[in-house]
Image 1 (cartoon, rainbow, N blue to C red):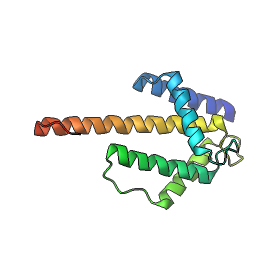
Image 2: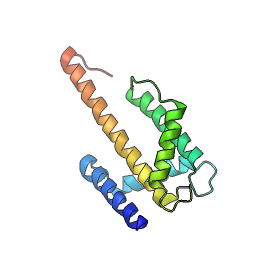
Image 3: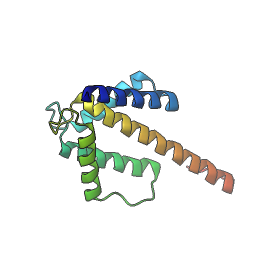
Image 4: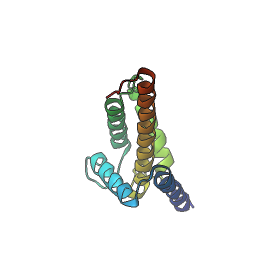
Length: 137
């Protein structure tokens, strides 16, 4: 039952990324593999909670740097809680470690959130350019 639930979530995520944002299956596979390789730092073939926390922290740093997010950087407590909730939601076999199939959903959610933030940043930039009449970097 849990495997069917995971597969349905995967299908929904893939559909959202492909049809809403035009992301190809190849790009999805490459994004998952890249995020997996940068997250599984001990190369044991699984992502534990500490590795998930590290990945979430890196993602927030990237968003703040690249998208010029004005909100304060999330606290360590927030990141730990988010990693704990992600582990609870995505660890379908209950072993407290995400395998590649389970991690795929984290990668998809991360990619979708990144694309949403990029779209919002672009819209804000366009709006600011309209208001001032000057292009912005």
